[in-house]
Amino acid sequence: MSAAGLWVYLSQTPLLWLTLTLLAYLACYRLFELSGKSPLVNPMALAVVLIMAVLFITGTSYQTYLEGAQFVHFLLGPVTVALAVPLYENLGQVRRALLPILAALVAGSLTAVVSAVGIAWALGADRQTLLSLAPKSITTPIAMGVAEQIGGLPSLTAVLVLLTGIIGALVVTPLFNALGITDWRARGFSAGLTAHGMGTARAFSVNPLAGAFAGLAMGLNALLTVVIVPLLAPLLG
Image (cartoon, rainbow, N blue to C red; front, side, top):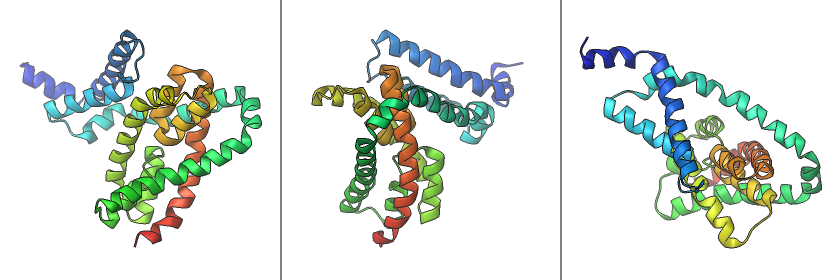
């Protein structure tokens, strides 16, 4: 069998894309370790770029890739539920900071929506783009559902969510260091609220307490955004 024929055969094998996903992440995580865990070498972001490059070069559709890597996609549910474990272990910290948490949640959620939509509106974006942008700070499946409900484009929202997560995971640590913020609860909560899953993963890689508060913020922000975005959508014209 020729090399081209072998590739055609392998590309239709689901195990290939699952293996590629795992190897891409492991390779990028190794680079992350070699860099001294620099925030600029984010393994999730690098793995996404690497996989996209492979799909582009080989002419493979996303649907074909997803059919092979769907086991990883399936694990998103159990992993999200598993975030309750570190949260439970730090329940005392959460209780003591309940009022600041609620205040930060409302302020952060509203700011994430209003600032992004306001900037896009000022730059001349159309209504459908604004509606697609509004839920960009929550996890992808929920954001796409919200966008579809209010008249946005779920596919555009998915891209915006991905970009938000990547940028947030890259800048969160240098930004907090520059601002002199040392409280791991505040650092983690901010990362999870603004950069959803990628921010949470970054928080866990830095500090367990930060990761627990990031997971809490990601879940609470998703719940609040589902409520406030449909209420604000009619104001966009």
